Length: 338
Image (tube, rainbow, N blue to C red; front, side, top):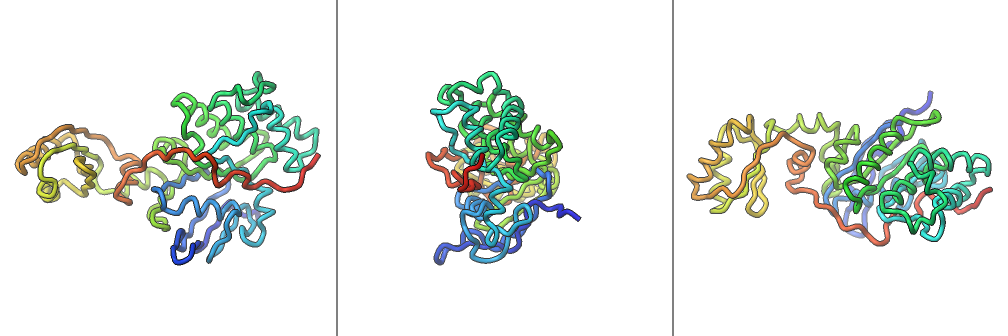
């Protein structure tokens, strides 16, 4: 019977000297699943992906990708994966079609199939009319769509996406989202597993069936977005921006019976409560009674961002795109094919 797991990670660890970047992590990803990985800077997600894409060997534990051990069978892993790095890697001096063709050659895709795949994929990402233009003339969103199409030429079983929409305008992000949704549905009888890292909470919530949150080298929460939200006490979040004695205000808020948790950052508080709209006036009264003043207040339902803050005590901020990305070249066989 065919293994239903695309990724199996068991107690994987990676140390750099005395520092432990990834600490005995275990999880599984089903075939055809869209899986999201979230974590603050330095949490260990980069190191984990480097191991899964065979760029680093684990210090301990095991991991298999597409049924192959990442440490013992790296060449087989690379043949079955596609990697879209954060940095744009398409060749500006080649056309879109030429970028697709040379990538297929790297993977040994035969000429006839390579041409058929190229035309099919260019049409899928909406670039057929611009296929013979130099990539230097493409917008950022067009380049990203081309790069997603390019790594699909050899029909990988798994697709690793590292911050795929960072730096794109909102409209281009939406276009890429729609493209990724198409991939999960599948075409030409294909089924692909997607492993996504992102700092955009709305992106993870929109696209991912399950999400893992990593912090300090350990997975601290994992499940569907609905399951993660249900695991947080309180059904609403009240956000307050205040002035006044912060410690005194926090102590007073924590005593309220409808308050489950409070996170503070500078002069802003995020308070998990029951029935936020009903209890907001009482919370404002508590702040004022504690010699504080309300500068701004809002109420909203729990979101994935709130889940992240609940487990890590901090919010994710968009990282600046790197000029050179650690995934450039990952999964690229050395042999050229025809």
